[in-house]
View 1 (cartoon, rainbow, N blue to C red):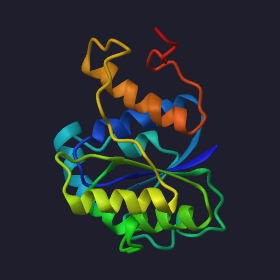
View 2: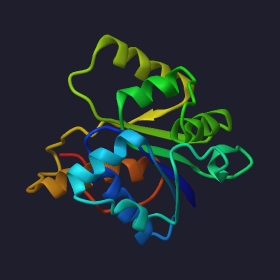
View 3: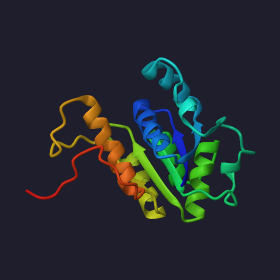
Length: 183
């Protein structure tokens, strides 16, 4: 499996880190692109950029010569985690102003998996409309919401729930949370 991981400028860098850790364990080839806005947030939330070490390959945010900018570079899709509302808006409206959005646009036009993990609260009407446009275009939207049926005990349990949902959407088996089996 070959996936693009996009990180945009919203709080939640730990989600990208945890996803990359899980994909690395599973020997998934990962191509990482971090938006300019995400750089600052990663440094604030993680202390330093630990993400590039976890990826198979990483690219600059404006590297339009990168392999992931072309549909002829075969991937299984892209996960944008966290996904800022600026990035949601750009994807929804086809404004490929950076490599992250270009890679998402390529995946959409090639009918590959596009998973957005939007990180914003509360959501404005414009945010909701852009998310609906993304969904209509074929994106899967997985907000990092809390769930209590798996009985989380730590913040890590809640993070693993979100990462487990992303892996589920990719068809990757995982035991990161207790899947619902009924009452």
